[in-house]
Image 1 (tube, helix red, strand yellow):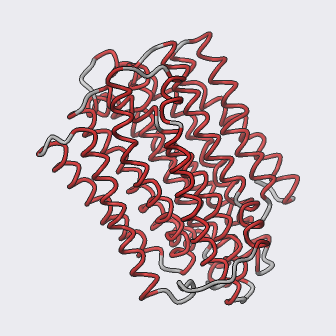
Image 2: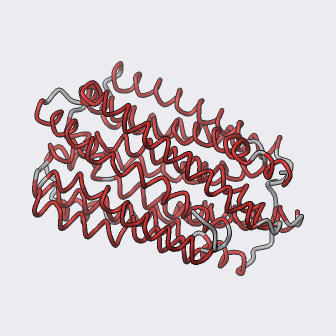
Length: 439
């Protein structure tokens, strides 16, 4: 990295690092959307609902993986900015090992609580059966996914984000091809669709290991000396990402709990279909955050605090503009979009009306997420945690339980926009107070 290049071409550097990350994240999210398409057309709406009921499981894995990975890559990035190559490599190797151990332990823990979770949600019949089958296989895929994501952050930190983008292209194409073969040709049902995800993740892992064995120059695999201090700093620095993703998982559980009891399976199916759009947009935002984070950490570690703040402001402007564009495009395509997944007119009507309300949150959510990434990148995990707690737990949970009680399904759709609006006010106050710069 070159400070002069970052200073003279801030927007260009953000895009250079973020676009490959965005493509990688969008391609990753498209796997979920493609799975939804094949489940909706070859399994049925109960299959879509079953997959959505298990989304908190995915967010649990993401929370653990991001806590270790984002925390570790920020520490390594600041060491790289300071010119300490030895510390940089040690942090990388310890972070990867920690990620593997944490992912495996998370998988074992989740497997123990399948049945109690299904009982609490009130899942019965085909929905319960599909949940067991799909997530019984997907637990293995999620372990691999977390490890792949951790490696991917260091590939970007290495300065070769295009390689990880190519890995994700291969993964998505493999997953789509296998989804078609297993679901449409072999009629393997929901088990075949989950198996396709697992195989594509393993293909990605192979390509990633090749990079670190043959191509990496900064972050190299090998022995390391375990440091309790590095582990403590890693977990503390990544705690806001853990809180953010874990809060999202808790919120998804709350959404499912409320919708199942007030509307039923059809409501969960409609919410899932709208959620695919939110998931893809969220991955775009995460791509911007992951792409800009190494630049922010490097600039801040080199003492260029003002430059780090300028990177945040430019990134916020970009994600806000993209949120507005998604709102307009999906508003025009909502009828066509809903028909991709289900033929049920009642569910399609819920999707079309709910999407326009829910997507108002896109005007604020990207700024909140990028600001949280920024605080983590400069080692201010408390501020990042406050943002994550607001948008992912405290305010959101209050909206989920209160608004639907008075407004039904409309209240479900309104929960996200209200939450993100409150949070952006909090984000603005934190930026002014702690960084003393204009937003």
